Length: 297
Image (cartoon, rainbow, N blue to C red):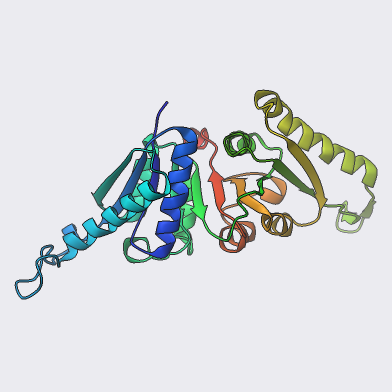
């Protein structure tokens, strides 16, 4: 399949960073790049053309065309060999990007914005795009190490399979090492068996660690066979998922997480882990949604 990479632009420096990253992703995949600017003004009671008293290049429509033209030029300068097309779409930006994700290989956005994409990663808007996009979403942020590894958060759930596959494919395309991180906690202490009967619960720590190691190994095994060119480093970390991923992202060129999970990744896009990753990771973050989630509701 030859679905394009789609990038949302608004003229901000952040969106131009996203364009450069999207152009590289398109080149790696051997597909085209579609530059999209969402244009809400046509549905508002404001003139679109230049003011009678202003320069002919003025007006909202001309401004939108300049945003797209600048982004297209930037993409071609970044990756001269790729096909680039620009689009001005009428509609609300997140709705437009969600619609474009139906026939895209990847949707790329910046971590800050102006105009229609203002606050793209603030509050519910990031949750909406990452939770409803029909393809992976790449959020360009931080200062990635271009020679660094691809970092993957593994939780062992069936819903996380799509993220694992995406991470292996990215590591293969980039010629990068894949570092797969799985966190676990050594929970010990009293667990109540009833209102008046607290029961002690003591885990065999070694057994628990071995079980979590097995979960990590099994989650990766099939993908390692599919991508024999990818060097994989497994990291079993005792502690909090958020802290482990943030620390590891400092030397990474990309962080990949699933949109849903269990354990440390449960509700990833609804709680503190998602806020930490999307707002504080030191490298771009790819959020990969389980393709079967839409069918399950």
